[in-house]
Picture 1 (cartoon, rainbow, N blue to C red):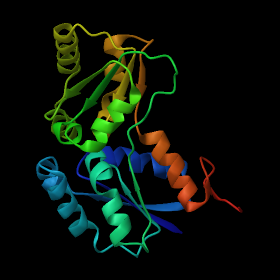
Picture 2 (picture 1 turned 135 degrees about the vertical axis):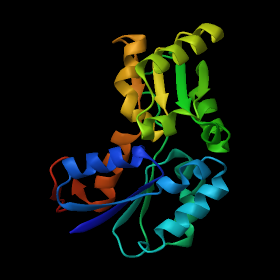
Picture 3 (picture 1 turned 120 degrees about the horizontal axis):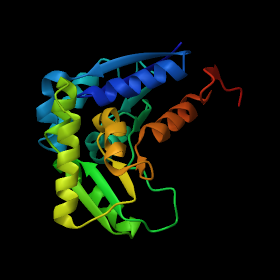
Picture 4 (picture 1 turned 90 degrees about the vertical axis):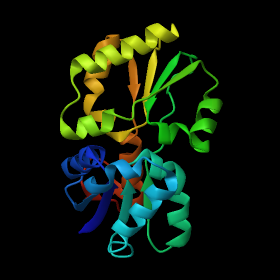
Length: 222
């Protein structure tokens, strides 16, 4: 059986591991969720890399794939791990690009650590659209603890948009925990808003790397 490690520091990794187990029953999902260092993870890319490397050392070269279900680690350290451990397959969460060609206003929800990276800057520059970034460092921990309410989500988003005089047509989630509140975010803006996350693309690439026909739970013959 194929073995896949899903690494994160919060519920975002749990959510993605759930998706893999539900849709790919032929793989064994190993959850490596470092709850203890969740706050340290957001301090800097260097600290996140150090924590991840220590946590993953027992699994490197022992599993078929290691997935970083964490945007900060994916954007800043994926190349490092691939270079250092060439015999191990790694996959990270990418920032999802809009699927439409119309240059709608975009709101990106993320954390300060991600927003400060050069990769994030280059991503927003290449979109060539009117973009606002809202960093919500307190939300991941509240989601992990089950303390983020619908009222707080609505109040925070509406207050920010009113202050910025900004009406988005598309939203990009650049924090894996935010997938848990995707429906609440959509409810603030109504049914017409398009919300993008990294889960589907990461799932597709997981199937490709493992040579699995996605969604069937069967090994590809190609």
